[in-house]
Image (cartoon, rainbow, N blue to C red):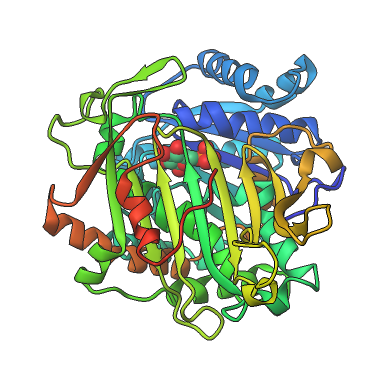
Length: 502
Ligand code: BG6
């Protein structure tokens, strides 16, 4: 995690994008590069090599990328900056199924590095479908482009999804680690590019007042919510094979969970922070199949309305099987087996086509003993919550009880709110700027290490297995535009708890 200081440009390098004609490059990577260029946070000696499986001319590529910049760069697009950035873009054709194309890529890249004087530092960004990650890395390794020598660094950025279960994630780690060292691999989770997610660390550890009460003695439970209004749209063929659990939980929701639940790192640097995050994920209780079924809820949306828009049923979406049992909603109860959290449930929920878009972490504190107010007309105290809002409202909210003015003691719940936008004026960003910048300067604090990835999959694997066996049985349905399946509410109700009203 880095503080942007004007003028703090990374070392010269080549930035090689695999999947340069894809959506991710157009919507996020190149617009983020533009934003970094506007802040003067790209190296002086720099080149962008766009790798596509089929040949594309420089003009056609730049035109497509410029369209993306105009649409997604989040700030005014200036010709001067565009020209400087695009002047250094070179398209190259390579396909991991064709070994000779990688020999040619090596030659072309080395030629460009000399011409551009980039000093041999290279960042390879795999913005491709996941089945291409290992084959590309293998080819890059074979032609020697990943070997760190002569003082130059070589880094590989791997996008999500990293595996689709524990076995495939392990296999991918094993393969990548046979080609590169861990410090060269940057496994991206875009949630870590969000300011408010990074702020969880600062909120917990740069303030003296939270840490003493951040444990099972004071916290009753934790709720992590990532709700979206969007349905699946045109992503049917990807999503139907993946589902809400794989798509969101071992990565995004577990990033939030690990930042909330980790022990304080000895130092605010990559190794310590990543080790503590890995530890806490590894401490998530392993569930038997029966427990996994009891502690999980899966739902799929049916036709419904969000605002005035009719959302067709998931099963009627393009490229989705008409009898699909893929979940578009998941709610889970997890326990963390360590000294700090023993007995404190973590409830997670995430879903598509819901009534509102909201990402938040809510810490629910234990209740004050009510008997003190026995003689007063106080029947119920408001719940004490600390809520970290991530989207759309970025901020922190504390809910507590206060006295209602008047001669008798009556209480009412009130909220104290901090909103980022009231205090800081930040340029709107794509969310990828910090991540790309950190890759360029070699700070991997905000990237996932192999152990965290595997610990995440390990925790969800029993649920995946149990659902697979159960087939359609247990799948609930909820109308698009609703709050999700009833089972999600039952999950907390049976513990005498309820979700915070969003
Ligand atoms: C992606 C998932 O990783 O994250 C999408 O594949 C999801 O399904 C998205 O919509 C959510 O990201 P954000 O930043 O909008 O919360």
